[in-house]
Amino acid sequence: MEGILLDNLINAQIIKKPYKHTTFQLFTKELCDKLIKNFYEINKYLNTKNGLSQSRFMLDVEGDTTNGIYYNRYPFLKDIEPLNSVLQMYSDKIIKAHYEKYYESKQHLRYSLQLVYDKKNYSIGPHTDSFKRAATQITYLVCDEDINKNLGVCVYKDLIDRHKEIWEKKHYSFDDFEKVKQIEYYPGSSINFKVKPTSFHGVEKIDVDCNRMSIQTIIRKD
Image (cartoon, rainbow, N blue to C red; front, side):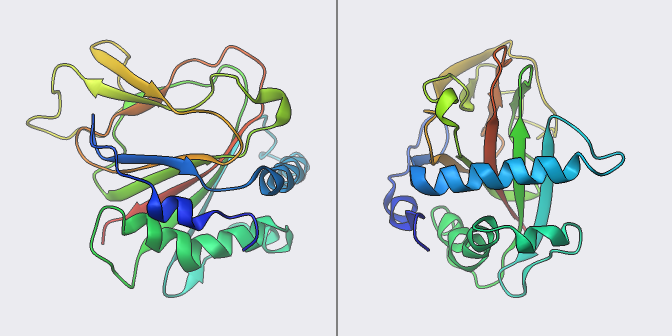
């Protein structure tokens, strides 16, 4: 699909410290601008539904690489372009390419595609993602007014090896973590990583007004 830089994902070099991850650009700015309009459209739609009105949303769209996307929870997404075509590209190619960065190829993969829209005051402490997940990917869309703001996810090194014995599914405070890097925040900027007991990442408190939009991919373990 035009605007998706799949080769960047495939060819990105794996960075091994503090855990295996890759950074790259997945979408062109032109595609991001179109997807941003789609996210505004979704937000407008949600604001018309009782109990769904919110300044932040996260839509969790599930599927698998055999049967495709399950639109039963959010059927209106099938009518939103180019977002629908982008999600189809995830199901057809991006999910497999992401998985094959860290594992041997498999035909059948279960996944979730999360459409996320955050604003001011969002924060999430260091966490690894669930041990039920195989890999995670985040791609930012980035509005023009938010370019150069420090809104990318941060990668952390655990200084006390807290998952040495038990891999906990929880979010921690920022104490006893070293921030190794913050992912650059520009249209299409992306990070993916193999989920493991040390794959800590998080977002320090956002105290500026912003429209922080992303498509996040979760590949599940069978």
